[in-house]
Image 1: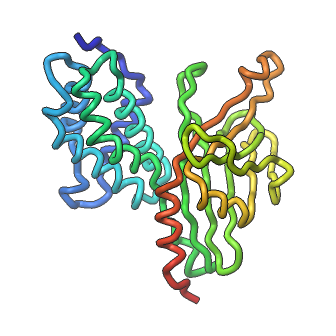
Image 2: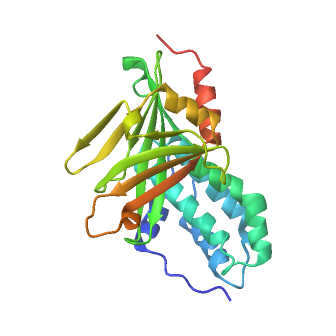
Amino acid sequence: MKPLLILPITLLLTFTSCTKPVTSSEQENITDSTLIRVLHATLDSTRTIMEVKDDIFQLTDTMQYHVEHHPDINIRIGAKSLASTLLQLMMDETINTPEEVTFTIDTLLMPFTNVITTWYYDTTALETLGYSCLNQAVIKYEEYDDANHVSILDVVLSPENDFLTLTLPNDPVVFVAIAFSKGIDDINGASFGREDALEIQSEESISEKVYFGQEMIDAMLSHDVMYIAYTETDPTKTKSENFHSCMLLLDRFQQQYKSVKSKPIKQ
């Protein structure tokens, strides 16, 4: 039997925020009952994920719309967090049958991954300042405090050179490095440390903000995976306990970046 899981209140709040439609279109409008049916099928041994596949597709379509179009970054983070949580639940072999896990990998992995890895194209400064921005929230769940920690990436697209801004989680942490790989198992790609940054902004009670130039963008375009490493400054913890990292697949970035760059910039 599938065990009964008690979902944290923060996750339920994420569900609520993510299911608020941003347009009146029925395609984007999703009810709480849809989400409940998906959760029941995932956690209830008397039902299967396959029985609610239409509900799951409606849910992924809605989340995808949010991460592409919603101007509120908190809503986009909520959608990504929900997608990540549901995908982990559906791939958990301890609560799902082999058939359900296979169905998730073959049919649902790509839609959920697209939600997690899609960038938001922000054009609010295009008319006034002449540049636009691709924004991404990389979410890492940490067991030690049972919370999500979010790193923000902004790729600023300008008529001259593009650049990347990394804003670390709002914790007492400092930047260590960004590394790249050609695949999940290959970590011998390009890497950038503190000495490679154009600038590092650090103020008390504010997370570090790190700036990189065109070389970073080129690395993002020529690798498959991006890893962000940072460390806490807690003297009571060991070095390994202080160290944290998160990762991001880059195929969606490469598609969206090339699409945006192919459009003429309005002068």
